[in-house]
Image 1 (cartoon, rainbow, N blue to C red):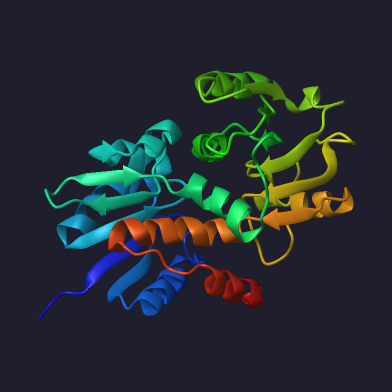
Image 2: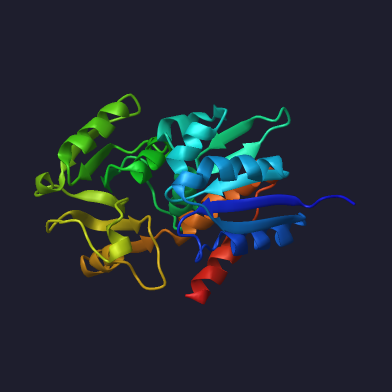
Length: 275
């Protein structure tokens, strides 16, 4: 009897994860036979849980909060985008028994923006709110779209400046504190802070969003996030959240694991209808 390939997402909390539903639909759509589960794994149990998962025949893992940096350290080898992000959300068992770490978050975001929402990043001024792991994970894919300028703003200015310095070879990028944003305006504003998770908002000055500007919150919820509400009230041409990014990064992981890229549009439509 052939064993069905096993995949999972590890994280804490994980109960409300949409990933099992997403990958089940992907598998049905592409005729793949697999099992994908969501498992509550805390940081202190991460290494032992991952080792056990692969020892028992697991083929691939997604890692979410708070495990992405631990997954980066765990992987035997990392892709270039995982190395630049210093975080891994996709672990894959290789033929030689080694574990490859990848990061599909950034390409998931860019695909959602460009393909699903037809947002142009080339030649645009981009503002990224937050200088944590989420920002680090999206910078390289964003620079591949050749924006005119990227500014990273953070509550602690030095953290934003350090992150910008790290990516200075990719393009025109600077870092600053939130209190230095007055008088500036941007074509695209990306919220990569965790503020939305607590229904909060970074301090944002008036005039920050250029006419016909686009706002995107990497977080998502059943109700519009605080940042999405802010963008609507400030006349954004598009006020988007990270549900599409979630589905697109999952599709990239599915492609890595199964060698076929599923159609994301019906999955995004279904998840949007559910909320």
